[in-house]
Image (tube, rainbow, N blue to C red; front, side, top):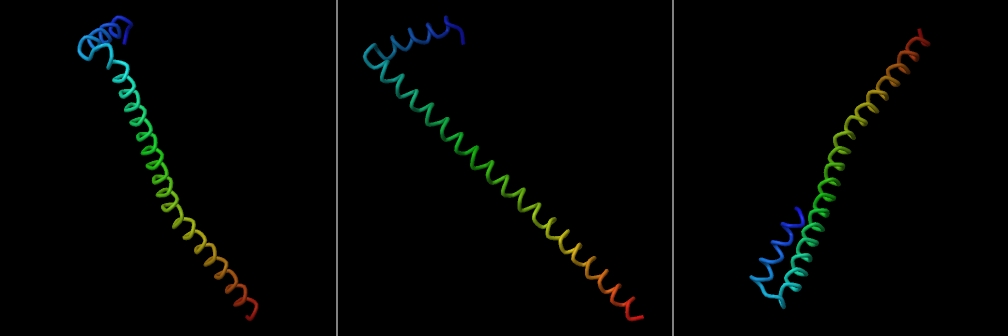
Length: 87
C-alpha cells in the first residue's frame, strides 16, 4: 500500500467516524490484529507439535521391529552355535 492510499483511507475514516473516535478505532483495530496474529501463532505451534508427535509414533514401530529382528537374528545365531557345538 502506497502513501497516497493510506492518506485516502485516513481521510475517509476521519469523515466517517469523526476525529474523536478515530484514535480509539485505530487502537481497537490494532488490538484485534494482534490477537489474531497471536491466535494464528498458537495454532501453528500446536499443529507443528502434533505433526512431530505423529512422526515419532510412525517411526517408533519401525525401531521396535528392527530391534525384534536383531534379537531374533542373535537368538538364531546362538541356537546355531549351540547346535553346532553339540554335534
